[in-house]
Amino acid sequence: MNFDSYTDRGVQAAAELANQLTESWAQGAFRALPSGGGPRRKLAAAVETSIWGRSGDLSAGDAEGLIRLATQLRLIFQTLASGELDSTAQLVNALLQKHHAAPQLATHDGEPWHLHFHSQEKEAGRAEARGATCATALATVIGSGGAWRLGTCHANRCDLVFVDTSKNGRRRFCSPRCLSRDKVARFRARHQAGTLDEE
Ligand SMILES: [Zn+2]
Ligand SMILES: [Zn+2]
Image (cartoon, rainbow, N blue to C red; front, side, top):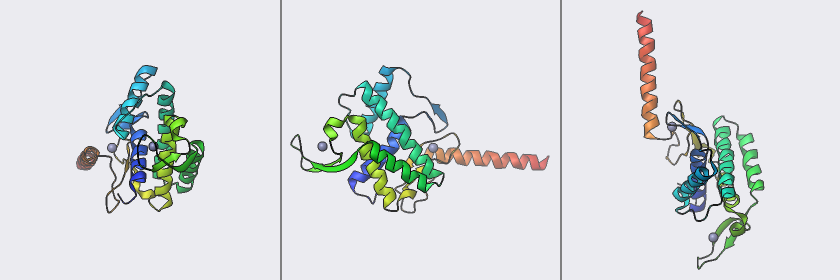
């Protein structure tokens, strides 16, 4: 993608959280969130690992925080998809504030100086820090004219969101699977209309 790697990672993370930690239609099937504390924590830890490569110790509070964050991120993608850029910008600003986003250079654990998005990233708790990272990345993309890169799937029974990294920026579906589901649906609709015409 065109953004720097921090931003790239942050927007991908925002999309992944919105897709995996909210109740939604995913490629034709409804996906509910587990209801018990244990399974919710396990799911949040799996999503953490899939995004950042590790989950570490994830408390029940962290898990619920990530699930709440995912709902807010989904709302941002959906508001943008409905063409409401002003409302989207306000939602992103609210998220930046709520998660106390404040970029800071940090060095710890023998790592070179790198960017933290939360002023006290290590102390703030997982969800808080992730929220700051995602909000900053979304703000960077939207603030540099890249709002069109944040998409939601156009297929029936699919709410998945995505980051459009294509050159022409015309991506409409979350996956090749939804692209072909949509083709089949259109074909059937045409076929049905044709049959009705003949009657
Ligand atoms: Zn760090
Ligand atoms: Zn889809």
